Image (cartoon, rainbow, N blue to C red; front, side, top):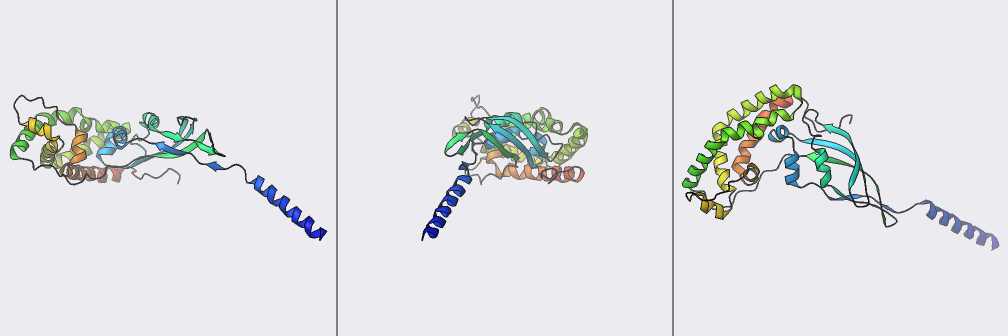
Length: 256
């Protein structure tokens, strides 16, 4: 009986030691805030966004008890040559971490994550009031008066400068060919999108002479117009097919 009791006592001690060896309870860190869609779009390198080429940047950062990232290191970027790593510095400010918990207490630590640049999905069908012929005529006048300047000095005209410098000229030629192939369709889609992006009050003012109409942005038009999205998607496909035949386009981690 005494032997059995000693064995039981030894087993209890072993179980106690095993419990101690499991270590502290750790809850991994998670992100409670990441960049918004608008913030990611603003940071998306222009040529890659126009061509709808996906990109990824692999990061390793430490974080504070307040959830701020610090001492960050880039561990990879793909595809190379499209400057996906250039906007990382400003994007990091939008991340907030819920720190890891060790036995229920917050503790600083380190975290690995991927900054993912992904093409914008198509907008839903437009459900606004039907666009009138008068609105389209007025919108075309606005687009025709500004499109050349917009293309020359805006994102379209500078997109080739957002790739590796040795690709400037080939990329500029790709852009010219793709946009030229969709000139008329793009003009019509931009005119329609110009009206679609207006709030109802702005649409009422739009046809009023000398009204204080504020206009709309390219982002507002792209976000609401299926017609403009379709034209942009065709332009992107032309550019992407040509670019990816000449340069790497896969968003896979180098060495994987």
